[in-house]
Length: 270
Image 1 (tube, helix red, strand yellow):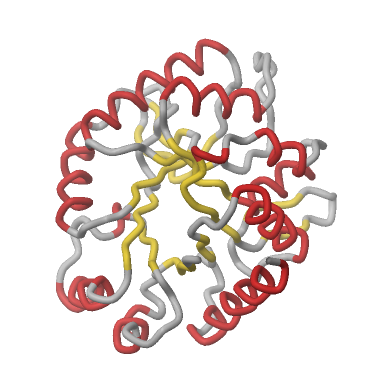
Image 2: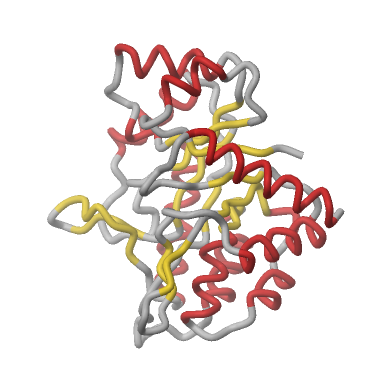
């Protein structure tokens, strides 16, 4: 069993100081946030990586976007992954760039054949360039394109099958989408290919007064998402599991307590 924590600057010095004894197996960072950093943060990161495995979770690949892949970025990314011994590189099945530049948000894509062909081809190019599988996350989305002619699940399964990429199964996103778009999260889980699931994300969400759930990563993991995590472990077996907490970040001890709570829930259900 392997448990991880998103490594954030808010607690990086403390984490680096204590990392040898912390009950965390791996850390996850967004490589874009570290490409140009040196000084104390870079030294703290190196101290952490002496004791913890590194997972990289990107923000700006825009794998399904309309603009050409950014080759200069991919070169720097490959150097970073290799230079820091990253075990995994994951991204989002979404896009974040148009002709005007980066949009600083993850936008949904239409679920149809043309989008599938475009995305699969780009995944292949990225995997060939990096020399490793691309791990893609099922993302939360809040609207559907009228031209979509298949479901989120059908599109995801086709991407996995045709590209050979792996899946970062975000259970918070799965629950949020299942509630917002009115489908069964359990049925979604049951249809996934176990051999393609690389690791899990869990996080908190916000329940909007008008009924929508918003993937905010600003609180602990809900009972519903914890239940999905238990179901996933029972169905697919153990996978590395990461706690995301990116906004309103609490002290490190609270994050460690939340991770320990999740660990105990899984152990009790095993």
